[in-house]
Length: 453
Image 1 (tube, rainbow, N blue to C red):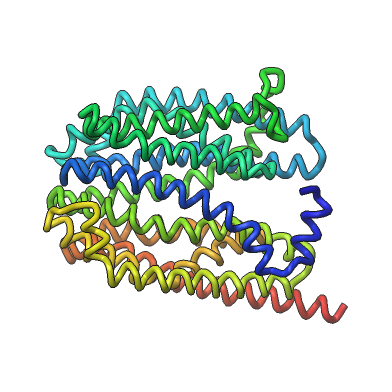
Image 2: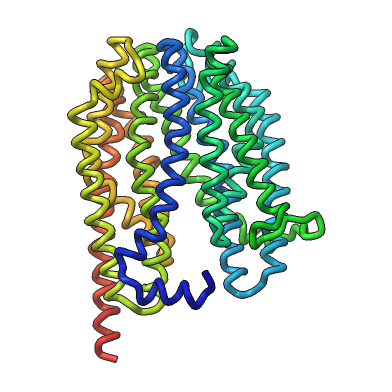
């Protein structure tokens, strides 16, 4: 799709159609990522409560690796998309090639650090003495596969930036399907336990990485990766990290808060850690749909705001809020009513089921308004309102959640752990409401000026 066709679609096509066109590929991509982690947990759950706990403890570490990949992926994607828009193809190739090499070097350094300090990190993330051996076995293999996690995130975002989302989706789905095939083979056929689950993940990610690199090498992509294009400079890295570092901080806070949650749950036993891990993975399935939709919403909102089409901007916001709220309300109903059946899929331990049911119902308490939170956080990004966007992005998993995890368990024991996320969601909804009122006043003022002109 050239710039003229894209402009016509964004500025003239019916808003529902535009949103569907842009959001569906992103939703599928995000769901594949969620299913990836869910399948791992499902197979590992057959090994017992300690095994589920081990995977739950290592998950924040996996999120940390993803945060590094997203830092390079989102940072380079933002820079590259602007350069392509300015017809600076050669410069875009230089940014892509330099970022690719930088991400590999970073992955190597991170791998060395994690190998040296793996056990202290896992203990900080809530590993108990009974969980630690399996968490170490699982984590060691994932750490050696860090290079695949980071490169995947980097190249996937570069492909999306140039408009080649199809290739990105092929690589993601191939990895997910292979992971489903490899899990039972390595875990049970080869009797490797949690180490088998980690090896299945690393190998499937490795295949995804090879596929992604092949798209560039075979020149299926717009961007070209080449040794001659590797031209690092201070200006390039400043542009890269300007977007990349805030993205890393958001993801890091999510990883950090997950680790804190496991640590807060550890005094209540392995079942508490395992149940929170299962809840996180199950909840992510619905949350990823909203995150995927927001990726489609952002360019539509940004384009129409920049073009001065305030009526289309308002319709985009309204349509998105209605669609996401209908979905989140339906998802909440399913989670609330069928919580026992859902948690039972992953464990037959009565204690894991008991805590897991309470935890799942607590985490979706304010989920009907999750679309409201996410759409407005994305809207501020789309409109270039950096401070408001950063505030909302950091609030749910950082500003409100981290103090809740540190304070509530001391007051309410396990209930404090279980309801920490609900408390953070409630505070985030209030903050979103205040900021939403202000931005709509600004949009209405802009609309009046356009009508007067």
